[in-house]
Image (cartoon, rainbow, N blue to C red; front, side):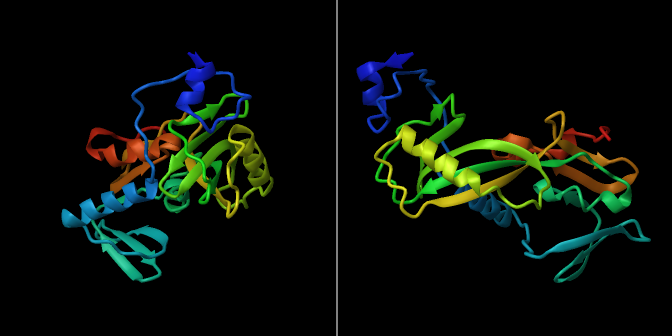
Length: 231
C-alpha cells in the first residue's frame, strides 16, 4: 500500500483525490496490441503461411470429405479448417448443426492521442472500474462491459462517461482528438473457449471464445492438446 508523497512520486499526474493505492510489481505491459498482432502474422508468414484477405460467407462439407469455403474471392477448398474468428465464429458452423452460446462481451475505451500526460503504471480506479495506461499512441482509458449481439451498435453515452472519469483521474489530461472504441470479446457462459476437433466433422477445428484473455491465450493455443466435447 502506498499513499501521500510516495503515491505522488509514482504517478505525479494522478489527481490528489486519490489518497492511497495498492502497487502490484512485476506486471508486463502491452503498449501496442496491434503491433503484437502484426509481429505474430509476420512470424506465420516467415514459417510458410499464406495470407488471403477475404470475406468467408459459407462453410460446407464436400463429397470427398474436404471443406469448401464460399468467399468474396471465390471458392476455396481445404482438408483442414480452423474456425478462429473471435466473436464472429459462431455463425459459420451453425448450418452444420453446431449451435454454440457465444455472445459479445463488449468493452469500451477512449484514447487520448494528445494527452500531454504520462502514466507510469497501469492505474485502476476501483470505484469507477476503469484502467488508465500510457500506450504507443497516447493514453488509453478502458472499462465498462456489457453483453449483447455482436452486430449491435456501440452505446454513444460510454464515450462521455469514460472521458469524464478519465479527467477525474488525471485533471491535466488533454482530451482534444479523443478516439472512442468498442471491442467485442467472444465469451461463453462458463468463460472457457472451445478448442480442438469437432465431433463427427473430420478436419474441422475450433479455436475461439477466449473472452478477456485472447491477447495472451490465442498465440499459445495448441489444438492438438484439446478435443471439443462441450456442446
